[in-house]
Image (tube, rainbow, N blue to C red):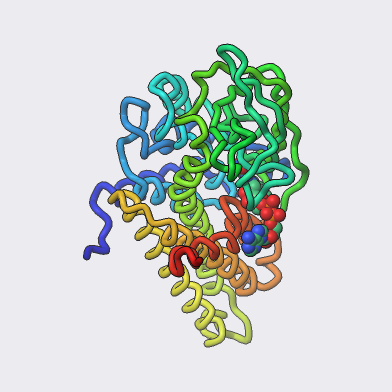
Length: 384
Ligand SMILES: Cc1cc2nc3c(=O)[nH]c(=O)nc-3n(C[C@H](O)[C@H](O)[C@H](O)COP(=O)(O)OP(=O)(O)OC[C@H]3O[C@@H](n4cnc5c(N)ncnc54)[C@H](O)[C@@H]3O)c2cc1C
């Protein structure tokens, strides 16, 4: 067993740290958060220097690296800024569906665009009436000659309205029993007639990121836009979650570490009752608890990523990592605010934004309750 990162992995961390130091800016983050505006310039630069799609093969402009290297990038981005970091980390959201299941033509057309920071991608699974339960969908895709005709509505879609394409999970066999055996993923380019988006409204956190409804009305795409196998889409998406949930765990881990860094620096310089507040044992215990939770979140997140890279896909472990890291992010950010008192509550001190950004990690890519279902199912197995 080896708990050391390799030289290359440490170099990746440093490269991301240097990038963040040069490009991230607190005042810009505050402004973009307030305006609900995507950090376009930073995303593009991240693509130019190879921080997006590090797990894509080189022929698709990636770095030929694994899930572990990918999550090191995500962690470091979110540690430096929870909002800008998450925006960049999710720039290529769900493009892994194309990577793992798409035809060569789809890969060649879309993956380099994503990795080079020229196009954002999106995964459209959730519907207004189907959130945690996507075992049956109202969005349908019907064959008409050489085309799919898609009708339906998706909601809460990250990068909606600014993405170049959507991986849409559709019901392609409405008679399938159970329904999930009749679903397919179909790639829909954003400029297809009949596709419109509508902002979902003000959000608690990750405010720089676009979240929209995606409405599909008689949208026609060629049959070749099918991603993977017809009627296997549900399983493909579940497999995708085994990878993407580790990335969300890394987002949570970085967010927790970033809030911790800020709180630690603060307690070492703030004085009350004639002492640094870091000298009060109550505060020291908070620091100890926060650091321990972060360490545990890091261990399980790295282990899940390592496991994925070994080809041992274990949904139980992935869900544990996502659930634990997300809870850690929420709890650590909460304590960071507490340690910083009234200042922690103010936007200028950043941790309130980290706190708001942390919460989504317990909701998207499967809520913490859904993660528990997966964990328990993996342990108990099928019961008759
Ligand atoms: C900002 C944001 C971005 C998002 N981005 C995307 C995206 O890019 N693509 C996409 O497809 N979706 C996206 N989502 C959707 C997200 O994945 C769903 O919101 C989430 O899966 C929960 O679905 P729901 O909101 O319909 O809640 P519901 O499914 O209605 O759940 C409500 C509550 O009931 C609980 N619950 C439901 N079923 C069970 C059960 N069987 N056992 C125990 N508890 C249960 C849930 O845990 C939750 O606490 C995003 C959501 C948000 C808020």
